[in-house]
Image (tube, rainbow, N blue to C red):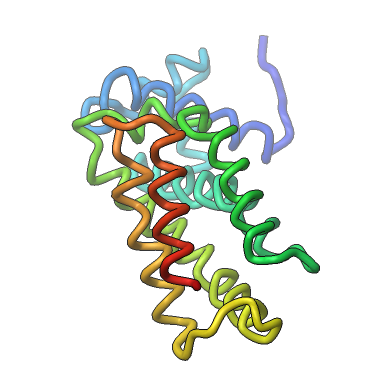
Length: 187
């Protein structure tokens, strides 16, 4: 029996299934047929929404990067907080989400380092304008004294990634290290 679903629902189902199969079998070893089989549909259905496995993967990365970045952007856009208030909210968000992300299993496998770096770059591109704007606002409010907000934004975002992705330390240790560094840079 054929089950008809709304296009956006079906597209998300294909993406979620693909990421699950990628995590289990690996990206290279997974075919569109494998994804369709996991969904109990014909592979033509997957090709109806995505021209190729690569396009499917790139769409998944873009959607996932937006999803992961949204809470950070929401915090950076809030008004009326002190610098310390922003840092506390960002830390709280990180503590509640670290390691619990939707596609964490795929992106954090040792053999998927390149995929993880690709995701990072997309996320950083999404967050960057919001970080620059945030720093400009903090500067106007007299919370920070920096000349080149764009360079500081890049340094903060790109510089914290090795700490965030260090699986050898706890989430609390990550937060502590980043907190100390941020406060030194921004004070």
